[in-house]
Image (tube, helix red, strand yellow):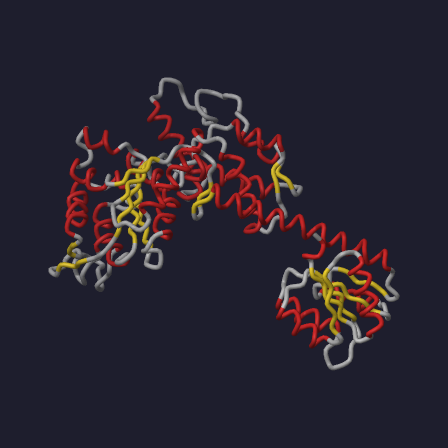
Length: 454
């Protein structure tokens, strides 16, 4: 097994080179030699070496430090061990700062070399095994940026692969925070349209007139403030995919306009007289049950059928709790890097706390919880104390910490709770949505429904 690890010994002293190479070959490693830095660089271009032994002082204009720097440009994962007969603190610091893994002094002892190489190879073996396991995990549980080991999600991944290169409209249904936009992006970027634009628009965040202009664009002078011709989202997505989030919130008039576009692939800009033709795949998403909405007259049946060509219901996180550890570790890996924190894992107690939570805000709430825990984490592993905010709080008063009087309806409690949260975040909708564990578009809808001033 050792023969698969290749080592290069670089030294201008032939006796030293051959002695060190012989010791390493006796240990079972495949060893090449080079008499100069330039020769070492040429050999590193032709073959990948796991370990380099490089002499610090070499003639020919390229010393050990410069040789090491060139090698690391070619093979960033290689371990470089600098050897010198003239050990000083300055040279040791310089070598380590430029990327040397070890710094040893001549004369070299065979046993010391054997132990050093064995330790480095042991680490490389672990890294290789981890990489193999990660690749297996990626193939088995990942689709694009989505990760899951849930059986229902595996079926969804397979469906997504099948429809990725089709033009058929897709309707994504699921609670806020389940990752509907991630699913839409995965479908788009996995198909033939992956090199074309992916354009997303939240239908709940804009008033009817603004959303109409946002979707279809407008001509100069078509309304007050229309200073020039503007392309809408349909034109921007031409050849690609348009993602319509919270499609269940659009007005009856826009439902008619959207139905026409889906049927004919043509539309007029606001204030325009020329018809525009586009090739756009539409992926729509909603947290509502559009079948019920259509049955009860709040959503056009013909538009629902036009959208519901391929239906994907994304299960909430509470229905796929086996994904919690997988997702949590995924968020730890990404967010610790983004936040510049050295956090690499989650303790068993912390995982139990995550598994016991009901996750009303779904995957988005889990991501926010991991980010909050990483920010306050005092060690390299998230503990239950870092996630203590997930523990159920004792009931106080008549409402959720707001001192609400009894006798209020659920809607009245929700309105006051949202008002208090917006007041606490000073009107910041994103911060309020995160605190409430809901999507921003859902919060915009509730603000509009309850007529809450911001």
